[in-house]
Image 1 (cartoon, helix red, strand yellow):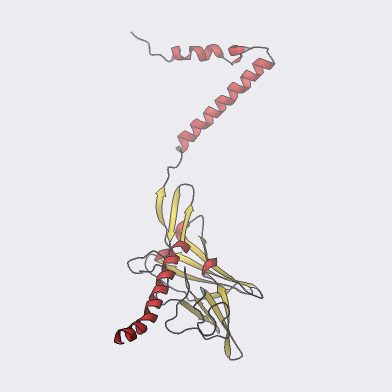
Image 2 (tube, rainbow, N blue to C red; image 1 turned 180 degrees about the horizontal axis):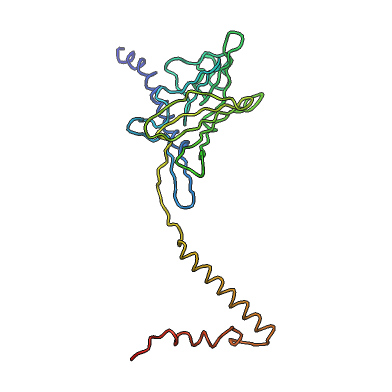
Length: 259
């Protein structure tokens, strides 16, 4: 009986830890991004552990929170939100767990205070997460993580600009509303810094490129000369090659004379 009661008490904890494990595992696939600029391959692994950030860019609290002028934004990067404390208290909370589990079934939620209570709107789902490069001319700058959600009235989204900062994490502090249901925020984090996983050779260099141009011009000269001599001068066979005598004698001209 004692063992049975103990098992019942531990069951919620086991389920909770298992949920965390599933969400962390799924984060690795969502938050992998590579960018190839022609010479270098930049790799972003936002959920990979770092010495000071064992879960990468994922908030250890289970969520990020920004409050500006009566509007509150909750979100998690690369996974769904988990609330051990301070959960959202919203009306309905449709699409994100409902009133009893509000915030637990989406990756971004915004609450606007109206009439003395908060009206919540789901603006991001884990399945709709997309990572792209922030500045293609400067891949080290960071990435943009965008998540979206399709609602009954309109589509919503959240764009998080993640700036590379090897010194530590900062933010998010500000929130910007870009459209009817489109929001944006910014944070700085070491996980947003790219690592070069492969460096390819930079072609042939200027000399190799010059050599290719010379060879192409030589081939065009030979082709045009041969066509001209064949069709306009009536020269046939190997004799149609322009300056044939010169090309035949060239090997003898390059020989070093012996004394």
